[in-house]
Each structure stands twice: as structure tokens, then as C-alpha cells.
Length: 303
Image 1 (cartoon, rainbow, N blue to C red):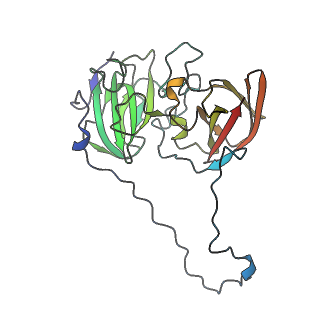
Image 2 (image 1 turned 135 degrees about the vertical axis):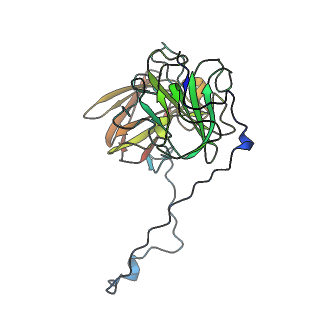
Image 3 (image 1 turned 30 degrees about the vertical axis):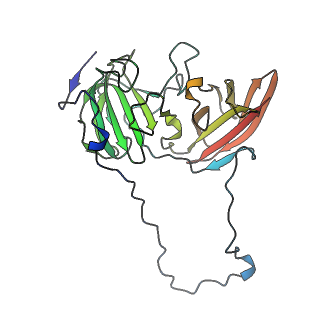
């Protein structure tokens, strides 16, 4: 294990109340420049009713719903580093029973690859994993950083070889906070990245699927799948996702991850996909569409 630090890190999490309150500041709306010519006449009959409202799509009723999603974080590894996730060990899966259920995602990279803040925030923790605060085990994450963002969102960056921030420090999206390493329970150099939601960020079971929170790459979107029985309870199954270009085999989340809207999710290239699964001897299938920069939500009720 390597414990190098650019700063003198704290060995415990900073008290939440000691950190400044964070707020998201939305960008001002765009306004069109004044027109130099009168606008064309629009027939009154074509104008929408002022009382008309657009009902939200319900994935329990529709075949699928395309939404804006919540892509609020940037990849913590940027080119020329490898910004792609290790798809063999996705969030909530066990790598076919070989590993513990995964609370984050892995980004492979060599020692010293810069690690960037995924969003604006305040460093809540930066140091070695000497106490079992953010997981049930000591020295599990090795050298790691936790950033607190607005709206009780947190990102965690683990197995670092070098720390370049300290607790209480404000950081901006894209700022270098450390370097890839192999500290803690890592079996090779990589970045373990987590997204957590709610409370003070220390709950090991408050994680979210990072593939549904990270901004999709160019031409990509994301797919959220809920496989539930008639009582509305999540079912553990293997899901096949096919397009003309690829076939993906996906495990649904382990049972400890089912306190959320979905039990499977991943980033995908924009296009049409056929989702299929076998449950109770019956094949269930659904055609869906993934759009660039959007989140497609699907609910499959199995009997």
C-alpha cells in the first residue's frame, strides 16, 4: 500500500456542520435578439390552450419513457487518461459471484493518472482509510477523497496513490484532487468511484449507480431498468440487451441495493435495443430507444 500525500490530510471526516452550504446556481435563460422584421402571422387555431399541461410519462404504463435524467457529474478521469468504465464489474453486481457486490464503478488507469473532481463541492474527507467510517472495513478504500456537493450528493474517489486536496477545501469541477493508485483493497491500479445520496455521505448503502449520474459521452445516453413482480418487488434476474451492433449481458443489483427506482442501469450508445429476460420459464421482451444525452426508463413486470 502506498500512502503519499501532497497535503497533510485529516484522518477523519470533517464535521458536516463545519462545511459551507452548497447551492446549484442555474444558468440564466437564453433570450433571442430582437427581431428586425415583424414575426409571421400564426393562426389562432394552432396555438396551444393556456390551460393545457403535459402529463409526465409513466414507465409503469408506457413501454418506456425518455427523460432528462440527472447527469450532474463529469467523469473523474479525463483524456488522455482512460475515461471508460470497467464493464466487467458494474455497479450492484458481483462479477458473476467472484466479488463483493459493487458499490461503485472502476476506471482503469496507470499509477499517477490524474483524478478530477466530478463536480463543484467541498472536500469532506481526504486521507488514508484508517477508520471504518465510509465502509464496514478499515483500509478498504486506501487513500481516498470524499467531496460533498449540493443537495446532499457526495462523490468518493478511492485507492489513490497521491492526495492533492485536504478536508474543508473548496474544489471546482475538473480540478485535480489526486492520482490513481493501488492503495487499500485494490488488486491493481485503478480508480474506484462512487456516487452517494443523502445524510452525511458516510452510509455505505447510500450509493447510486454512477452510470446514471455521470454525463454520457458524445452520442450516448443511459438506460434504467426496473424488473418487478406483480407485487411491485424487485426480482433478481439476468438481462440481455441487444442492438444491431452489440449484445450486453447484465446482472440486476444484489438485494442490498434495492432501495431505489431501478435494479439495473448502464450507459449506452444512442439507438434501439431489445431487452429480454427469462423469469418463471417465460421470456419477457421489450423494445426501447436510447437517445443521446437522455435517460430511458423501463419497467418490466414479470409473473
